[in-house]
Amino acid sequence: MSLSGVVWRRAAAQRVVLAAAFATIMLATTALAMTSLYVQSVGESGLRRALTQAPLGDRTMEVRDSVDSAASLDDRDQQVRRAVGAAFAVVGAEVHASAVSSSYALPTRRGAEVTDLTVFVLRRLLAQGRLVAGRWPSESRDGIVAVAISQPAARARGLGAGDTLTVVNRSSDEPVEVRVSGVYEVSRPGDAFWLHDPLGVQGVQSGGEFTTYGPLVVPRATFVGRFSGDSTARWRVDPQLAGLGIGDLSALRSGVEALGGSDRAGTLADRVHELSDGVSVERTAPTSPAV
Image (tube, rainbow, N blue to C red):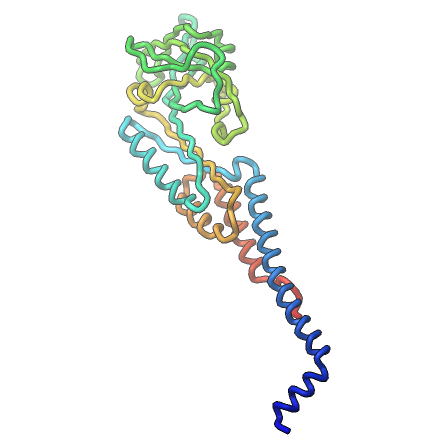
């Protein structure tokens, strides 16, 4: 009898043992595959939870820059949006842009020192602000600047829709006549839109010998035409991290690093680096015992 025949006869006699061995191999292979999928699933859910449930300041970024003209404001806005789009291409990001003028003195008693200030702001208040009196400002043709003011600031200064006042630029002494066209309240103060903006939320901010009330929100054309010189632009970046997967983490890390010093507190970059390093360690660790 040939050797192959002997092998087949013995195999037939031990078919139960062979079947059990084959089943054990299949179960082990399936267990390894399922363990790998489980580890990846747990890792991704933990990753998303670590980012989406982190404090707001740890999962957003802020870009700030000084601008001195309408052209520089528009150019910088395009540059920032392109850079953010590239940095967060794997997840997407909302960008909330605003710009703040230099300080203006509010009216005081004759001969009194200036202690009360305000600022003009270019800001789109869509879901973040609700009009409670008057109307949203539009570009004025009579030389008077139409503004919307937050409800806390309006109450603190005794202002309402239709009131007028004159403010004076602290640097140039240029007077600006202002008309309050509307009063609004902040709808969602916990949004990324308002992060690091206590004046925007509270309406009153004290620091040292000065107290600032406002801000005075104006239309884009008004801000660009009258207040863009010596102003500060700000872009709050809110990445959409809920759909982030482990495979996206490396690209996200590279994108955050590309923005570099734009991160105000460095916390988002630090958090992404920590998670990326942690995932690398988990991938190199054994996921199941040897079979």
